[in-house]
Amino acid sequence: MIQVAGWIGGPEIIIILIVVVLLFGGKKIPELAKGLGKGIREFKDATENSGIADDLKDIASEMKDVKSSVDKMSPKKFVENNNPLKTKK
Image 1 (cartoon, helix red, strand yellow):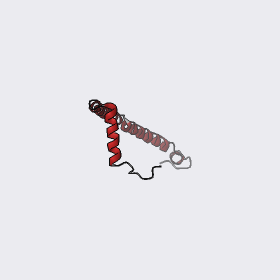
Image 2 (cartoon, rainbow, N blue to C red; image 1 turned 45 degrees about the horizontal axis):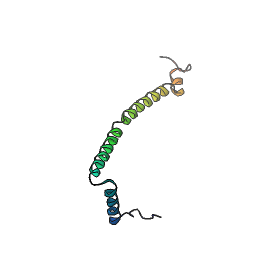
Image 3 (spheres, rainbow, N blue to C red; image 1 turned 60 degrees about the horizontal axis):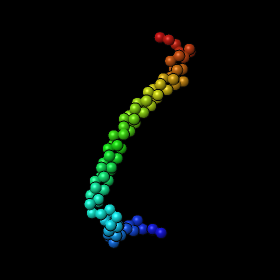
Image 4 (spheres, helix red, strand yellow; image 1 turned 90 degrees about the vertical axis):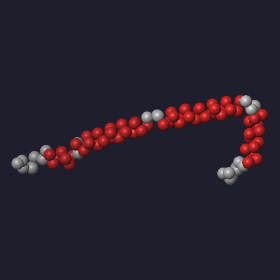
């Protein structure tokens, strides 16, 4: 059972690298690294350009519109504006 966060050290990394070289060979490793880098770059670009910020701005403006509509329908303001007991000037 792993109890320490830093359980992987130098010898473990060397063993992993040796296994990778034996499995894929020296010529395939640069191609794998290039593909991995390209995939990470595409994922990063997709998350940055997902439009979440634009969606949040749209939601905020819609919430502002709803709030102003609710404020217009406030019973207190309605009574103040349409109070029959209030004398008109």
